[in-house]
Length: 254
Image (cartoon, one colour):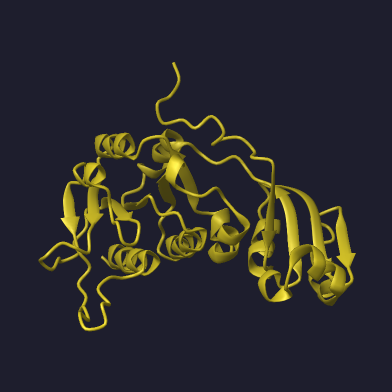
């Protein structure tokens, strides 16, 4: 019987990924779960390549103008591009089997957050605040893209990115595994005191739309991060990556 959460591609190598930026590439090269194809560098970054000669067999050095022609401005790539295969990532049940053994555990669910840079930034916060996994709906979320890897600054190597078919069913499964589910909604009228269960799921929606109603109904509790809204200039909500960082910090600190 096919597992109802399983994405058939989620636990297999997804072909060749392109990663750029020195921090992201360095982290990927240090990940012994990966199979690397090629490290491509601008001539300006020869010293970077020398550090990893034993890690990857094929290193290609390009003149600066050729590198720019192929990969764009070095302000974005920092003169370093890695072609590498993704590694096996757990499906939801595999992840929870390990995670549920912890005394204290927090998991993020992002409902229709589609910006790769936002998700990359959120991954970085997860790495810093000991959150091991992000769950997203596979129909409304990006794959692991180059910009996501760059924004994550290495966190994509350690934070599980789990794409499921149905977020509501995923929440139900998490509840059965003793997680309490908190939905964050900036339109909630009263302030919230952020007190979390030892095993918590934090659900955030896309900027503007927020959490979908059908997902919100599955949450055990709806919360709001306390802010002072500026109605004159219509500054009334946090960027989703900032909001997740605040909530994760609060969980980590308690």
